[in-house]
Amino acid sequence: MSFQGVEWLLILVAAGGLLAAVRIFNGLRNLRRGQQTTDWDAKVIERLRAQGSDPFSPHDVVFFFALPTEAACEVVSRRLRAEGFEVTSRAVGENAEFPYSVHASRSLRLSVPDMREFSRRFGELATQNGGRYDGWTAGIVSRR
Image (cartoon, rainbow, N blue to C red; front, side, top):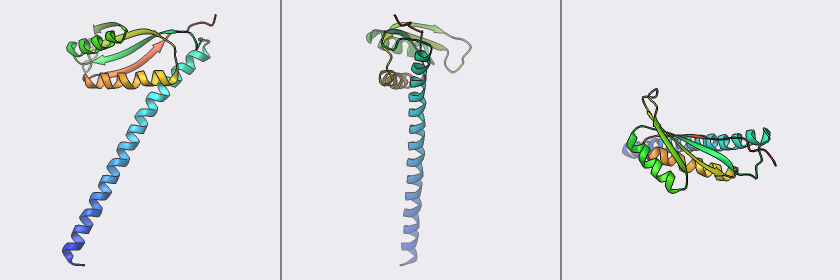
């Protein structure tokens, strides 16, 4: 093998190694993000059930968004209202990065797969508008 052939082989091996490292890093990061969302949704539902909340009854659920501009607030609010959510928004001056907050509420039955899907979709919605999805909460609904 000539010297040029060895150089090209080394370049190809190095490029392949770099590509593999980037793919592994991205895979681990995506896995970690998915687990955080999954864990959060499951933990909230588990906590509510442990506190005596009826898993078969609808709960008043509130979803939280932090957004950078009033225009982003309007876009997110409009989309959520179209999905049947009651929406409130306000300026929160104490956060320079995300000075606006949106709260969207709706009565829902709590299931881990459904809440994971809301969290996934709302995370994308917030990101598309330069913001952050901050999760959800619900009160306890006593068993009857």
